[in-house]
Length: 349
Image 1: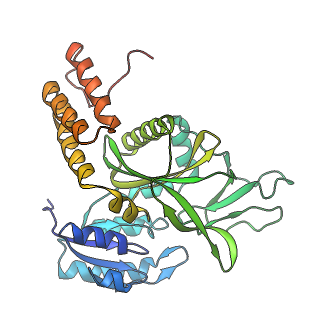
Image 2: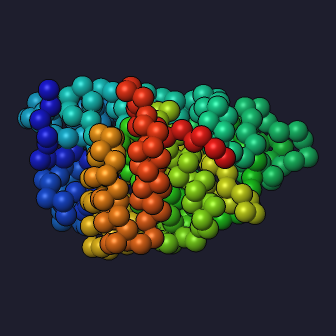
């Protein structure tokens, strides 16, 4: 059995934001990434792993992690972007270090577009029209071709009639000309809490307009209806996949409607923005809220209500706390069954 790690191994195309966050949390950090820039080296030991195609070179990565495992396998493993194309490498590393986050099977599902979009259909989560074959001639520019197992928008381009198809796994998706939102959340396998919503920007690639990640603007505006939609979809995805740790959902807005573009089952590039935006009061509210969740799942309704009310005193805008207060009141009248798994089922519309 793994013990709680005090040292972390961070593996990512760029590990700077995660390394800085972990260092602030008191962890000793080793980073394997493609850059080892000065900011990363200021907070962590760093080993450069070259890129291959859209992510980290799997062979080089196994060599470096294998050497670290020989020196001491007590590191906790946290991964970011760069492993989407090679879930088997993540599985190999997870045998040697304690994996903190989502298992390789989640990456395997997301690398299979047909399986992922079939899951969204079952969960009633809307997304732009998607197909495995090219769209009909004459619709060029209205569709995108996306390579599976990539990150940062590097495998995305507009589709035009006659264009060559990518060699690897790919799919075609309707282009929606609307703002793209990035939603960061933390999950425990059964529930989730939203951390922040950011609006994504793109950056030119070789001087040409592209879909490459080019930064984000924090505190993106979303109305109550959109937030409720995000929270519902977050929860059903967490329960369907057993998601854990920090994850990310990307949406495109089509008028007032939100369409899910992708799930990133690891910390995204907006982590630093969201962490910097969390006030001390918000952190205090989250700590109380999590204690309330523990009481809620233990069916101690009055204790849970008291903690959720404390959360609201600290953060009056915390919608989930009020929701859980209402659920506790309902369960006091009509208790859940003995084998209750923590899921609340609505009795009325």
